Image (cartoon, one colour):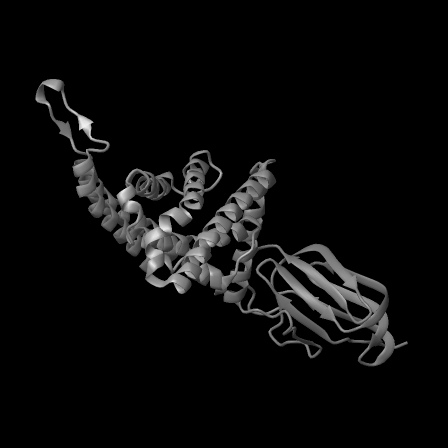
Length: 359
């Protein structure tokens, strides 16, 4: 039986040579490297039908003697490792390419693409190595379950507030402005007391967010709700209550579902965009509405002397709570600046990460 030369296709990476020999149902294979020359011999169905095929290739640069090969029904795949991780200008020592040898375009990469592939592999290996060294949290599932339920309860609470206020607005019109507190306050009290967990969660390491921004937002809202609205009946019938509650609930019905999905490693692109965008107009409007509420409450606190701080008896005077409210107004806008800066950084970092993954 005459020995023939098969079609051979090659490609390379910095550390390896890949050869694809076009012989199907190969048998009696002999593949070895001796003195930097690859020898191949085998029987199977190739370009000249069922025959015995063989070839030899002297490599351009030194390779390791170990050869890996895998025979399939269609071809024989051979992998040879280079002695040095360098890019070769050609495969063989002889400048003229053998007639049976051709590039394997299915695996072909130029040098820059191969370097990029190598870096990606190294990054993946490093990531796996780091993850293997980091001790897994045995309570991770429990923590995620707790955070999911917390965000679900808050979402349901604020959704009820938003829908209730919207329906009443369409039915009653402006009349709904004046009894918002008496209709909504109980659920708002519940949601805002529960929101204290948003300060505790980062403090104990349940979530990786800053404690200060959460403290500013939660305590600021609770001050408005419990002190300004809760202690003054005269404030409870004012339209500003409607605008404060409506702005708060509009922000939260998008924020809490986003956090719920994050607990189950899921993302909706539209929800992500809305969550990181809608606060840009609504958050300053909410602070503005809170400031209006504080300004409207100042004369009431002056008149009623409620929460005034008594001075020594010989003065016969007391420090009006309105002075504290005036200081609070300044702190409110300072908090707006701090939180706005923090949220903008979050938004920029989020969309920069998404853009990098897309590329």
